[in-house]
Image (cartoon, rainbow, N blue to C red; front, side):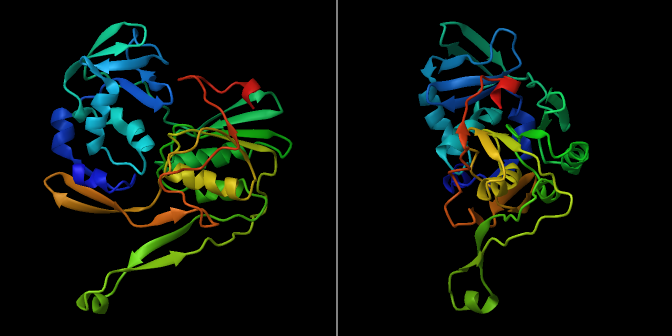
Length: 317
């Protein structure tokens, strides 16, 4: 795990089923690091409020504890590693105490599951007949994309559509949904990937890099033409970033929120046996204009930090 984390890539990872089975009891907290420190964004405990700041873990400053544990957390940036830290419960002891910014202390006995983050794509009116919110919590299964397209078909082109992909950690690139929202031509990533052949290997030559330039795609008939806003944050990741990027590139939508996670890339998976697996990213993606993306993410047009757990309100658009 320490070696894989040194590769500094969000799509390169090592997993051991034994580790999760024996030491993977959940923490019951999701914690994000920002300019002000470590903030609770999800909580399974009634006495730990969203927005609370954690200062210490077992009488040690949380920054000191994190600096030691992050050596085992993969990520394309220190920001991504910090965002993932509390999703790696096996790095924490079975029981520990946290101290919060109001001076209160809480003993954490691992085993509490976080509240469900959403298992379905949903839609609702923010302003009847004028502004509609489509929330897509994941692209891990085909139904997330299919349901989004189904809900989209009920809207006419006068509607201001708001799509919320905050916290969407990806899955499968939603090509059909992107096409359904694009009345203008668009493109996805430019990327490079290492290639080699038997002769080059026999001669001891290193792999060369194959570059694939982003290609323009033409709009499909019937694509939604109404105004579009997309909500993003640091947990918008992987295939969710594949979804967002074309709208940033051709300025089809206004992006509101935080800079996204900054990692995507179709990993190669190798089963090592005995419950152990290794993932290695097969490509390095860049914006169509070849600007760097990995470890940096997609910046919003309008920065906004919502309070932890806050819903999107009409006044935010």
